[in-house]
Image (cartoon, rainbow, N blue to C red):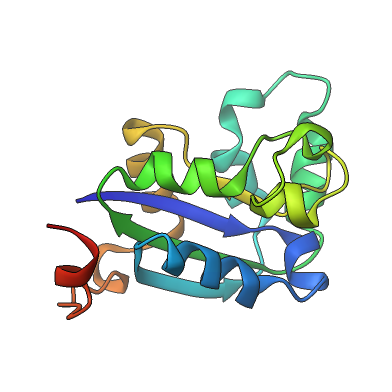
Length: 149
């Protein structure tokens, strides 16, 4: 099973959409194995966004993600990264499909509610930034036999 990091960003927390986002991911058959409500520090933000250092929007990203609490989660499932990314919708909310998190709730690219890892390597790196290994719970979910063959 593939693991991925999902962040409900400050706008999602402030707008009270955490429950809606969790529900949508659960309905896709993903299993929640780690979650925390936290304030992102500038140091953590710098590590998380290190690929964007030097880009014109970098400081804005760091300021935004540290402006208010986030909900950090690790989800697990078959093709978990792609399932999360499809469920989130396009990064630019203006073109995100209806039925996706961003298509239904977001209005602009700078306030797009959620972050999801974009590949296995970034998922492993990002999960390690936000969670210690003992904060992830490997638990048997009885519903799995009704979700996958």
